[in-house]
Length: 114
Ligand code: DGP
Image 1 (spheres, rainbow, N blue to C red):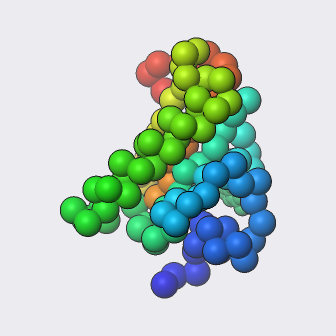
Image 2 (cartoon, rainbow, N blue to C red):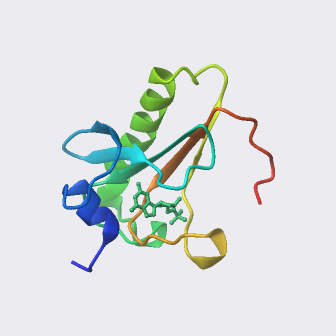
């Protein structure tokens, strides 16, 4: 296992503002929020990028989206709207190489994204 920041957070070795956790995923507030609600949904299993996904991860990725929708709903954004984003590799802005689903809500979000 590489020295991985998000492995340490999901393993409680580094503290985070956790909003949800179960056996599969942990969701916590982004340290550098880009919207009033900015949560990262992170699998406990280490997968570096979307390019590393295997068929065995299909249920895991589905769970990540389901949890993001649940958190958005619990914070009152289900009807207003929200965005979910995976960044993959350098040109997309991925800086932590352990997949994570960004959940952004609480302001108008431009399209196309920057
Ligand atoms: P990305 O650029 O898609 O790899 O997103 C990584 C996000 O992780 C970025 O928005 C900032 C956030 N982040 C980096 N380090 C930490 C940390 O130590 N704690 C928390 N809560 N978020 C972090």
